[in-house]
Length: 282
View 1 (cartoon, helix red, strand yellow):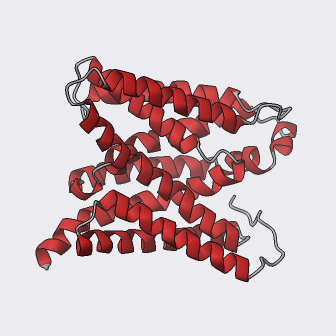
View 2 (cartoon, one colour):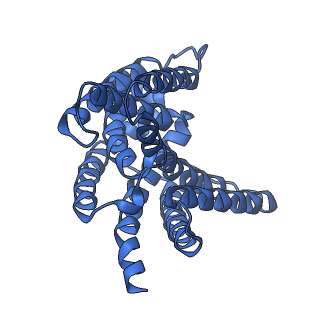
View 3 (cartoon, rainbow, N blue to C red):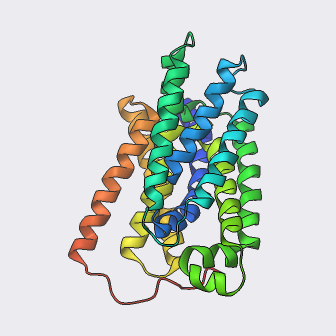
């Protein structure tokens, strides 16, 4: 029993860390209406890693990381300039195209590598069960830096998300701050995908945020509730994985799916009361 507890302690710590910042970022992403930006950036990071592998670097090497970073920077620029004011082309359409093309190119490149199928599977579902404490520590430090950055500039990020008209009236360079937002988000994604894979990272970003948004109006309450949902899903998913010997990532994702269904059922039974979603986060 103790060995089993020790085995899941580091993965649980990683899940807690991922929950902390992904829920915060997820609320912004859902409110922006660019739900799949996480998948697109994650796939671009994977494409960068794939290019690094083809170039002869190991998956966990600095060379592969720099390739991923380069693709993330490119993605952040594209997403920042593709937010059209006239709304004729939804930004989600651009994001979807980037995701599909990045996925296709990654498949083509991995098809030419000796272990392409294994690499693709690892990037998709991750290996959270085998995360080490040093990796947990490095991830925590990176997330802490990103969190501090967002706390320092939270008012600007708040305006470009919820009131872009006011942001322009106050003279904010919206595209520049969009780029910084997506760039910081991309750095987060690079680290998250290495630990948890694309599917689990997307789940942590979206499901707790959606659960909180459909039930609550206050930003702070949404954040706290989202954290609780993230922790609940992590614990139940890890327990299910241990109890029935299931793939850890898939078990956690499925658990979050069940939680989301339960929350949506509650929402249908209890109409949301009036209130304001702009309970200051700044």
